Length: 200
Image (cartoon, rainbow, N blue to C red; front, side, top):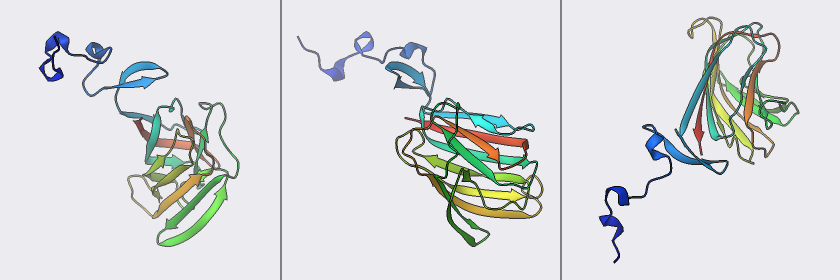
């Protein structure tokens, strides 16, 4: 005797493996051939304390990343850049395959090749605030960047500001799993960088 699916009740219902141990807001995702209960959204933050760089590793689950900079203070008035890794931070790409452009305070800066994705062409102020999005991060496609970055002479978005709309790509069809934030010279003295990611 057959039973229609719509008439199944209680113990007759099929549920994903491990659902009894899952928390609210978690989804069942196949990760390395295993079922894992986790959230679709992940978040972590790092606070700078006279660091040469800030590294985010173990990002292989993420396809889209958002980086938020909150009064990240550079010890020198230098460019701030991103580099990417496909071996979870053992090494970072530093060849001239990074292309970036900016519209800075209404003045366009043409796209150029760099050894990193620089977040603005300004070195006029020490504090960095803003938000950028990285797409196709852990896919064998070109990784893209877009966002807005503000350089400030004082914290809390006060003082003299230089604002840039930034865009760029890493011209390498590589699945990345780690990234590095670094100043072209000096250190990252203080401030917070928050990374948010969407798993898929």
